[in-house]
Image (tube, rainbow, N blue to C red; front, side):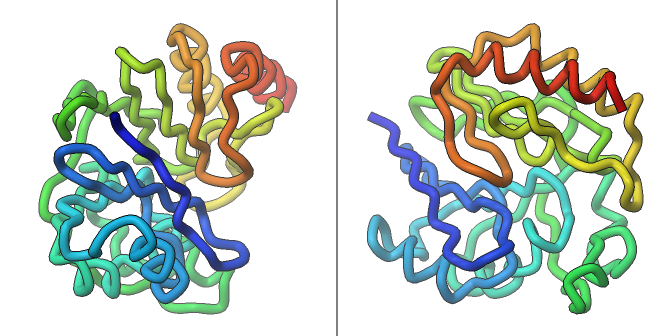
Amino acid sequence: MVEVHKVSGAAFDGNVYLILDKKPILVDAGMMAGPTLKNIKKFIEPSKIEMIVLTHCHHDHSGAAPELLEATGARLLLSEKEEGAVGDDLASVAYLFGQQAPNYKVDETLKEGMVLDIGEWKLRVMETPGHSQGSLCLYEEKEKVLFSGDTVFPDGNIGRTDMYGGDTPELVKSIERLTKLDVQTMYPGHMEITSRDVNRQIQMSLRFAKSI
């Protein structure tokens, strides 16, 4: 049975998820490696993690990537549309956090339709621009699980579009795509994990995005 644990531990961090399948992976990296590694060690030795998949390169999701890569030896995967933003203070919005964007090596770029086979789960890559140019979601069709990054959050909330690479009409199109999925559990980039009528929550997010 696949286990998912939220392992981020620092305030203002994006959510970091540890997926324990045949190939253990992290979804996102957060900003502070120390608390995250401490939480990871409750479930697995960090060196057993094979991949770190970033939903996008914003600093609150990627700032700790270099330290986590060093601790795990994992491969890092990121949208092909954001590979050029790595290390860029503006594109990564690191400046909003008063920090500099770190440099890290992208081992594989991701694009629409690719499937990450990690064992029982097959995570389909969906390009969902709007919050950033290369934002991604990951969908596991069999278990109806969505890792939504900063595209949609619980209770009808959405990722902001007023930063570098943001685009509200693109976000609307992306959320429209998500409304066509059957989602039972959503693991968002911020806020709490939800399994409460998730399809309705995504519809609420769409209405909100269209109202802006």
